[in-house]
Each structure stands twice: as C-alpha cells, then as structure tokens.
Image 1 (cartoon, one colour):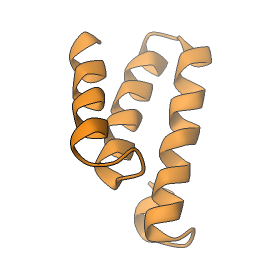
Image 2: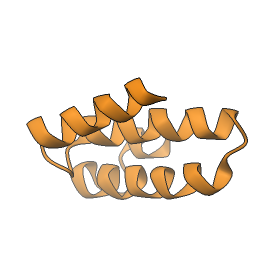
Image 3: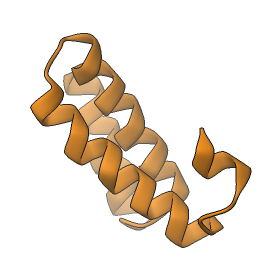
Image 4: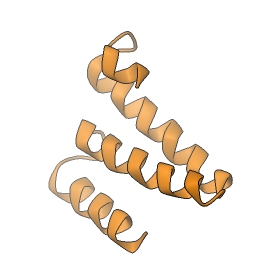
Length: 66
C-alpha cells in the first residue's frame, strides 16, 4: 500500500490532480483497499477517479465505463 500511495503523490505533484494518470493510481489504490475489504477507504477513491475520468474524457467515453 505505501508504494501505491507514494505513486499517487508523485503523479499528483508531477502532473496535476485531475490528470487521467492520477485517476489510474486512485483506481489502483481503491482496488487494493477493496481486496482488503476496506470499502470505506476504497469508495471515495473510486469516486474521485471516476470524476477525473469523466472530466478529462467525457462521461460517455469507453474508458470511463471501465
């Protein structure tokens, strides 16, 4: 988990908080929390990831559905 969090922090600093690569890191961290049954931590990350993808790609883009 610390590596995912570090990766997220680096991407947020190097790119922008709303960059699609940040959304990917958020999604990866959320998947880890989900696998650990830590749903209360996973859900906000999934939601933020979705918001970034929708803003960057549009709500009907095929990658948003993934």
